[in-house]
Every structure is written in C-alpha cells, then in structure tokens.
Image (cartoon, rainbow, N blue to C red; front, side):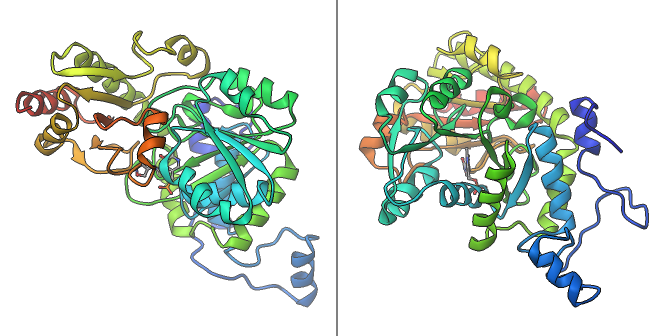
Amino acid sequence: MDTKNLGFNSKLIHAGAFEDALGSATVPIYQTSTFRFKNAQEGADCFAGKSDGFIYTRIANPTIKALEDSIAELENGFGGIATSSGMGAVTSIYMALLGQGIHMISTASVYGPSRGVIEQDFSRFGVEASFVDTSDIEQIKAAIKPNTKVLYIETPSNPTMELTDLEAAVKLAKEHNLIVVVDNTFCSPYLQKPLDFGADVVFHSVTKFINGHADIVGGIIVTKTQELYKKIRHAMVYMGCNMDPHQAYLVIRGVKTLSIRMDRAQENAIKVANYLEKHPKVAWIKYPGLKSHPQYELAQKQMKGPGSMISFGVKGGLDAGRKLMDNVHLALLAVSLGGVETLIQHPASMTHGAVSKEDKIKAGITDDLVRYSVGIEDVEDIIADLEQALAKV
Ligand code: LCS
C-alpha cells in the first residue's frame, strides 16, 4: 500500500510494513544471521549492489528494514538506519561525519555520553568540538571555525530542557556549509520533524518514546539525502552498531501507539508541571508547556506539543531533591525516559555524572536539578505520589 499520503497516525500503523508471502498482519521476526543466495551470481550481485537481496543481518534484515522504512517516512527523510542503541546512532554519525582536524559545534547540555565520547574518545583521533549554548544562535555563530563541518543539536536538551531554534540554526549552518544533526529523542517525530526545518540528519534513542515500553535499548538515524544515508550506513555496518531483528520487532510494536502514548503522557505532564510550579517547596521548573519557560513561544512554533519531560529544583537543593527521590513510590527512581511509566532521576550524579563539574555548571546541569519523565498512569496518582514525597522534604 502507498502510505505517502496517509495522516501521521495511519502512518504509525502502516508505514514501512511490507507484505510477505504468507500475508502476515505484523512484520515477522527474521531471526537469522545470514541469507541464502539462489546461486553464485545472485550472491555476487548482492555484494556488488546490483541486487537488493539480503546478505547478512549486520548489513540489513527484513524486520529491521521495516522499522527503518517506517521511521524514515515518519521523519520525512530519505532512509533509516537502525542501531543497537541510541549511542550506536551517535557514534555511527560521528564516525561518518567527523575525522582528523574536523571541528563540530554541539549543544553543551547534550546527553552526557554524546559529549563524553567526543571528549574522551574521538578527541584521540584529532576530532575537535565546542560545546556551546545552542539556544543562543550568537554562541553558535561565535564558535564557527574554518574547519567546522558539523552542527549537532539536541532540542529539547537533556536534562536542562533548553530549546534550540531549528529554523535559525539551520539557516546559519547552511551559510557555512555545515551538516546539521539533530537528536530528536525528547520529541519523537510526533512532536518535531527536524528534517522539515532543513536539518540533514535526525536520530533517536528509540529506547525512549519511539519504543516506549522500557524493554529494549535501540537507536535510529534518518537522513535527508541518499549520500548521507550511504555514508552513515557504511559507518554503522563497519562498526557493527546494527539493531537485532527481535529488538526491531518490539520497536515496530511500540511505534504503533506512539501518538496515543505521547498524547496521554503530555496531557499528564501539563497537569504535573502546573502542580509543581505552584508548589511552595519547588524552587524552579523548566517545562516547554509552561509560559514561564524562556522559550515557550519557540516551543509553540517548532514542536507540536511540549512533551512529557520536566526538570525542576526543590528548595533545599541536592539534599531536598534526594529526599524527594527516596520517597516517591509510583515514580521509579531510574534513568531512561519516555516510557509508559513515570521515572525520576538526578542527572548531576547519574546520567551526566561523567561530565566535569565545570562543564556541568556551564551547561546548566545544577546539583539541585531533578529530571522527571511523566508516564501514562492516572495523573491523580502521579500528583498524589509527588505530594506525599514533597511533604517529607
Ligand atoms: N540521546 C538522548 C537525548 C538520550 O537521552 C540518550 C539516552 C541517548 C541519546 C543515548 O541512547 P541509548 O544508547 O541509551 O539508547 N538517555 C538516557 C537518559 O537520559 N537516561 O538513561 C539513558
């Protein structure tokens, strides 16, 4: 079926699904490492790229391809590349686009390991990077050097919930021939489509909203052009960052309910954010759906909704935040995000623990920051849980 003209919710169900010989309603799990060739010529043709038959699961696999085709269509891109994890996506992109003497500009408050792998690993191979507040376009402009090739944006950023103006950032990047990469994990294609703003590469930790059930880790990259697709797929295949067919099957299952899960989580998050903003023990809150968010207008412009991630500080700083985390019962004290269950965590000592103290301060990852991923439970229960835990602070 041609799904190109379907609405987003219909695409979630039908995009990328292929028809197999037995008429399966869902995409079967092709749990195989390798594929038989009909004859030697077909094998040679597959390797020469003259046939698009499957060869070996690290290179491509029908179940994984169904997911790749689905997300590529949802992001309005050329092609999808599924990876073993979100970090598999990050490193495949870095490997494909960076190299000796190449400089990248990135969001300072980016997911910790996306920064750490540059500073601790890629730097050993001569890659340079500047981590700046990309929510301020002037800071991006000031960081551009003659050897800058990539602008890497995470919006909203993890965990500071800062937004980067995609339209303005892409405009500036294009004036300097930079490739724009966007980590769209916090939004999913349901809330934000960076390629529509002119970005070149978009990717996700599908561990989060896209899969949504906290039962796998995975990643996916979508490129705007065939050229970038080939380059990044090559890096993914050669580094062995491929997804597994069983993992892909579960993600395909998760994708189908993406919009209804996100609608519910977001509806809850708006109520939770309003509750927290008024709570006397809450020192500050950052949520793009609140008018108090400094980029509330930008959120309205580039996101379909504010999502379900909230950052806030409790009066009394780190100790008070710890007390809150130790006293919630419904929310799981756990890292990750974007699943059906509500999660709470402390970025400065957990997800961003490896970022240096100085860089954390510069990126706004303060010791009192508590990150809250709102799930799809009854919102009354989520708020009651926060209420009793805050009472103990
Ligand atoms: N990008 C963002 C924005 C993320 O939040 C994460 C993981 C990744 C990339 C990497 O994806 P992964 O390899 O874990 O699938 N974020 C996590 C977090 O905030 N808590 O635990 C993992």
